Length: 167
Ligand code: SF4
Ligand code: SF4
Image (cartoon, rainbow, N blue to C red; front, side, top):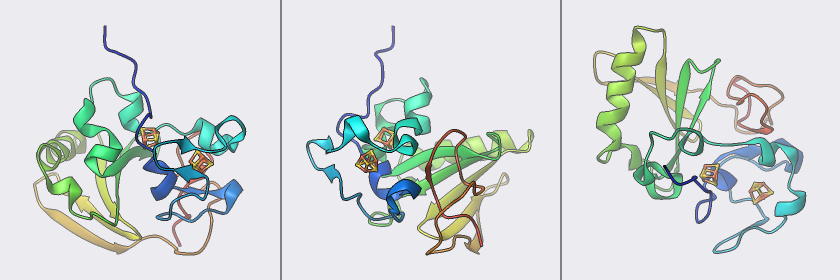
């Protein structure tokens, strides 16, 4: 039996993802996150934090190499699962290009295209689409820097952790 996955030692979403309830912007560490200890307000953390689970946590097929703190990015879906977002830590913007990530992401983009799915690489406000035929298409700046989300397109269902809605 596959051991249950755990957030222990990670916390990358506490940096990369905005939290409406805290007015926490994306790409800055949450003021409650403590290295080696995790969330200092875990028992009373906002509902959005409690609801959020990245795709590494949800997908049994993704092994430890894909754990966000090790990979350097957080995976989450949007658009009813049609879009896989690869939210890369801006402190390490090329993390997704390393093995085994780049090759696997390209494979998902290629296979998913037939079903109308896409893989987007995000570095802060900027976005690239992994093309089914190979290569990257630069989609430019897609995120508003200052607004906080209210049901924006990037929101995982049931989660209050969110990116600002697209302008
Ligand atoms: S990024 Fe995923 S594994 Fe890491 S703390 Fe957040 S939900 Fe847990
Ligand atoms: S309050 Fe939310 S974002 Fe902040 S450290 Fe806790 S779980 Fe992470």
